[in-house]
Image 1: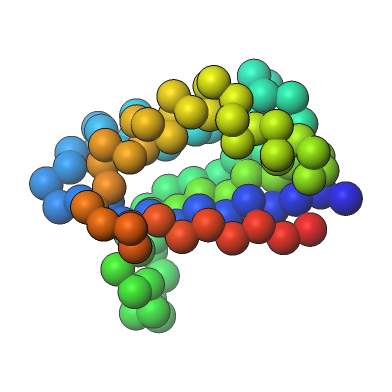
Image 2: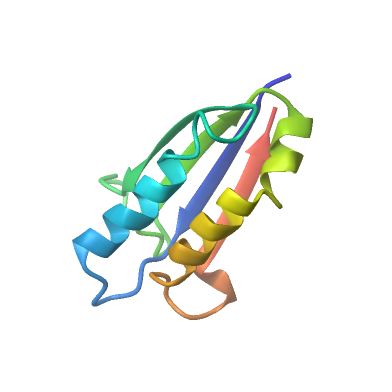
Amino acid sequence: MQIKHVVLVKVASGVSKTEVERAFDDLGSLVGQVSGLLDYSGGANNSPESKTQGFTHGFVMTFADAASRDAYLPHPLHVKAAQRLSTILQPGADSVLVLDWS
């Protein structure tokens, strides 16, 4: 059963658009490089609902199954992309929200 992996982040003020794009491009480039990662979509929030709770950007990945998602988490390419993403985030534990479902 496919897994949707949803990540919402709070980008720190002062981070350039270029830095944000690089971080999200790194994540998107994992499609085709990480087995079982089927697709990726991400970007800046543009919801008019005013319910973001400070989250500014997000992305969704689809994995073939839970085993693919679980193998992705420690994958060296994911670790590298996650490290870049962490450099653009607001400080604090509440700058990332992750939710998965099948």
